[in-house]
Amino acid sequence: MNADDTSAAISADASEMGPVDYLVLEFPGNRMTGEGLSPLLDLVDRHVIRVLDLSFVRKDTDGSVTALEIADLDGDGALDLAVFDGASSGLLDEDDLREAATVLEPGSSAGVIVYENLWAAPLAAALRRGGARMVAGGRIPAEDLLASLDAAEAEAGPLS
Image (cartoon, rainbow, N blue to C red):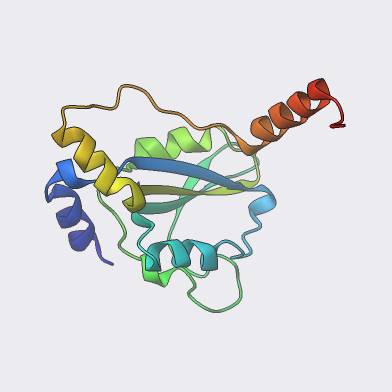
């Protein structure tokens, strides 16, 4: 995937696109293991998501912020992320990376990914054709969901 392909795909008919989300994934202590790379590639290969932008940023212990190049970030000698080299739609810029770094602990790095939910594109396009429009969205963090489920289970008591 290169930047021209990504930009062209976005500038194609945007009414056919799925919802676009972003994630800021912190790696405490700048420890990137590459553990999530295979599942990410699987989502791309199965056309569940399309990576529009992927960037990395490091926040040093003094608070300074540095953008990192896509390279061998896990230090094993293989360019694991080379498949995403050039994944840049232009949606993510230096200001966005600085903003992402504000939530990082000093001495940590982060991957910032902007992706289209391809799985939802047909539904979103059909709804748009029918005159619907998205007016709000959000995400429930897994920890909050689990806590709510635990609380509901405790209130309900044991099944008899």
